[in-house]
Structure formats: structure tokens, C-alpha cells
Length: 179
Image (tube, rainbow, N blue to C red):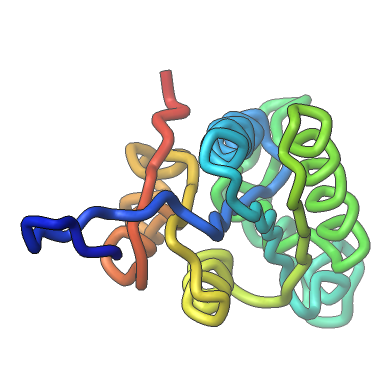
């Protein structure tokens, strides 16, 4: 913040924007909006993708079973549908896949004209990872998509946007991606 001649505070444009992605179409919309803001404000954009530390233990055939197997056993899915709810797909994302997702999103932001872009693939719960990253930078703005806020599983299990909205250490933009 800077002070105006009359003593009022004037806000400065964001200097660091953190955006979360899981590679989904809705997350791509959030990254696109964050990139547009970073470009307009000449801000640094940090693209973050969270992954489950032990994603390999969640895969079918793992010694203790898997999230996918549990979901299939309790709620059989029609052929061709994703067996893990989309809001929980990060739990089956490995570190390598998360790195690819984050790097691709950062590349798209660079291609849209953002000059200062970084990406990070970090282990942990997506909301916790985004909140920690926004706190540690510190970020001026945190951007997430609205995915999961209105879904039944999002209401039951919680969603990333709902969690970060309650705990964000900075301004928050929830991009409406559920249209």
C-alpha cells in the first residue's frame, strides 16, 4: 500500500499471483484468468499443482488397495466414466504428472505474454499447498477455479475454493468455472 497526498491508502497492483491447477479444463480457465491479471499488472505468476505424496500406493494393485478401488467397490461407475471423483483426482496424481501439469500451465501463461512465470509441483492437500505457497511468497493474490464448490462430493468432503476462501492470507479470486 502507498499513501496518497490526502492520507488515504492506495492499493498497489499485485506483484505475485499464485494460481492452482490440476490440469482440468476448469483449472485451465483459472490459470488463463490469473495469466491475464499477471500480464496486466506486470506481476510474477506462480503456477502450483499439488500431488499426493504416496500416489503410487493409491493405484490399483497396491498392497493396501487404492482410492480408485474403494470408489469402484462402493459406487460402480458406468463404462467410460472416471472412477475417482474429479475433486479427488489430485490423490492419484504422481509427482511426475504434477510437474508436467504445472509446467504446461506455466508454458501457456508464458505464451499468453506473462514475462515472469514459475511453476511448482508440491506434495500435499491442494488447499493446504496453495495456502502455504501464498503465505511463503508472500502472494498478493491467490486464484482458484470454482470446481467442487457446488458438487455433492465437494460439499461432503470439502473443496479447494471453499477451504482457501476461509483461510487465504491474501486477496482471493475464485474464477467461476462451473458454467
